[in-house]
Image (cartoon, rainbow, N blue to C red; front, side):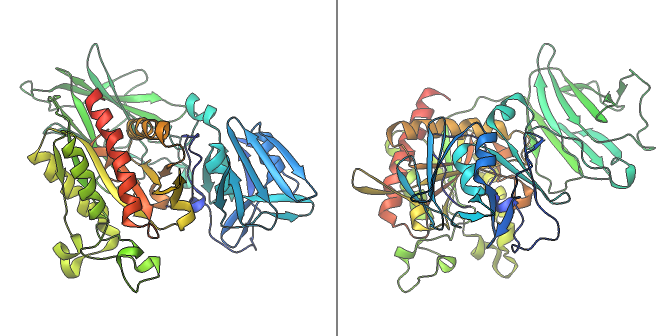
Length: 491
């Protein structure tokens, strides 16, 4: 989880960690697309020291940004909306809206073109970056495209067809308020609810029917057998080929009364499980937990200087969780702070890669015990440099916040809206203290982060390994104020 975001741009960013990590030598040239249009720069993008570099003028002008080159001091100034970026050739220091920022790779001149680090451009000009490995292409998507629904990270697209055939639909089952769908390959569903009448609608593009479940006739909607009339929630489940052009299978769950749904993270990309339930009155309690509960700060670990070793069983990120719990409790909130130490719980079977599997059990257990929980916060610390995770406001240092949204959660937009609401409250009083939002799919991480369990769940990085506990506590106090504002507003 790297780098800083312009605080004024809260738009979708998938960082260059999804781009290939390789040397500058590439067997196939990288191509650059913006909103589906090939930009054809005179100097193609390239990878330098594991940083993807793109031509400044090509990308800036394509985005409608103003660009000024000063040959005297070899600087590039890019202005788009309220964002202003100043970079200097061969220097790793840049200026974003008056704030100094350290770059991973200095700008360079190649064949008369100035190349800039893509991660920096993406974060500060509010664009989404997607890396397509098979075609060796960098796909950039603007915020306008995201709003219109053309964003490939938000709207399901027809997957590539291996061997000329789409994955097949193997099974549709409804039991115990759960709709389960199984296919022979990866599926990318969209789940929505409709009213008058109440329904849950599941659309799965790039899927075909099979011998196990034959395709209904054209313009025919088939009905899943075996739904008992006594079922308290569902009256019937129907399915059809909704759109032949995209081979989209639609499954409609007809409800007897309004219901909420939750997409269950089964860990199987070939399966979909949608759990439905009658809505329950929800309180405004807060749950705080830590998937990486031993993340610590160098200032708490005498003799430790390597941020990769900043982990401790007792002096760790849970101290910030305690602070947040105390702050919110003092403001009148009902707070639950889960302090599970997964390494102790799982012993020799512990695996860092299963952190979110472990913490999912924690969250589900807390929700079962305390159904009044409405807000869920997974508090972490980042591993970036001190300059990236620290801001000085009025002569006082604060740890920066960084929000993470998992794109594998089909309802990620609701979590995104929640994170943006928090950010707007925080940035209104402390501009620049939030690095923004990092959008991650399964290619760069878990991709879910338990955010499928609540639309008001957020993963928040508070500072980094180089920050002090005092700097983190100052920021936690600010975060607590914003959370309390949302809680009191009923959001």
